[in-house]
Image (cartoon, rainbow, N blue to C red; front, side, top):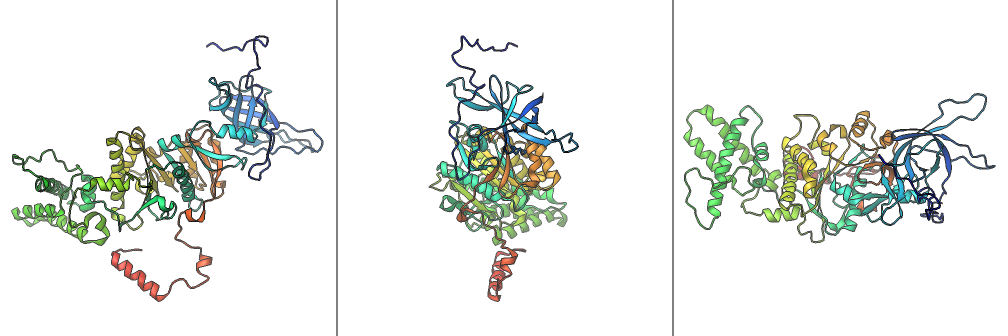
Length: 574
């Protein structure tokens, strides 16, 4: 392998660009935080692979204060052809001296990238990967504000500012918009650490820069109705229209059949009845009747998103019941019929089974769900908190599948982001748990969605309980405080980056703090998310006990109103 050798000094007009960095701009205060010039803190004594070890140096200047070196800080190491950049991963004194002498301090550094001249315009720019490794004796300097800005702010790249760097609060923390959205991302953290606020901060910044976005939030706790103001289309079971004929057969069978020993027989009966019902609707709605041979269903399938009437399904079941004689064979028919009639009359399922008329409104439904056109509301917040638990997975499966099919049929012409709160609940890691069609729909988006402009944003407090296939497809991880060792191990195993040591800080992170790794950032970083205005904070329905119990909080009239709503909804729990 040939190595490029720079020309002799007599033939070169300038010194190699990265060996002597251009003078940084004057150190001024930004955001009220005084700037700190770069300081030499150590020198390299060992380099192995992507790691280097340096010995800390003492500043002998009278009155000088020793530099404080912390894990996660950015440092730089000038070399003859570039300036190598790395993150401090450990600080130690392996052999403490006795008798009051000075300890020998060591720092371990994860090498992450380098600053070198751009071949096109000669300007210094940061890129990942290290071509010119530091050597023994090379100086290690703390990165200053100029270095931090150069590394974490990529020129000519779309970014969003979501907070500030932990190392220097005056330097904004930016996420790479296209890499973040196009390659899936996940927000993890224990309850109360600020996951919802972090997600809201990200989405608010995205919406501020993109008026024609298409974002769908599956809100299982009703936290986001006020987070995006008038820019959000708010949907809940009272105004949601998701007709049963949009379900594929697997989803329909899950909603309409029981889970006992006769389920296979019920599924077979349902399949024949749905297919016949679709044919009858097609015949009735067609302006002309085409001659068909007996049994010819003109290419219709049970999975096609074509309208049909439940009354026709019940009629087919009644017709078959009339042909049966033995009581034992009629049981699956009667159970299936009873289940359909119950769902059709239950007000909780009115958004799916309660329509008295059936019309082909698929275009209108897709347009409202996925904001086509968005009419100034580029984000849809779907409140699923009051959807009956036994059908929640079906609803999520339908929305996820429709999003993928729309992306495929639009041939990538409609980039969309699907946000899944509490993702571990409907795509669990354990085999056999959860609703398989929902897992399949999300898994398909995770593996193939980016080809068609469909991306996932997952939010979970238990990454260890999330399907590993889906988790592994998230190219950017925004990790907030995680207290359980199992969750931390899962994040380490599914994060491919050169700064995994930063994840050791997960139990120590404060509220709104996060470690961001992956392709959505120029380089791994520890950040603090910006404060969100009061009106934009996700809603928390649980008020503080000390505040709520300090005054009367519910009277008899209020309790009676709750009971009335409870009974009216027919729910077993609030």
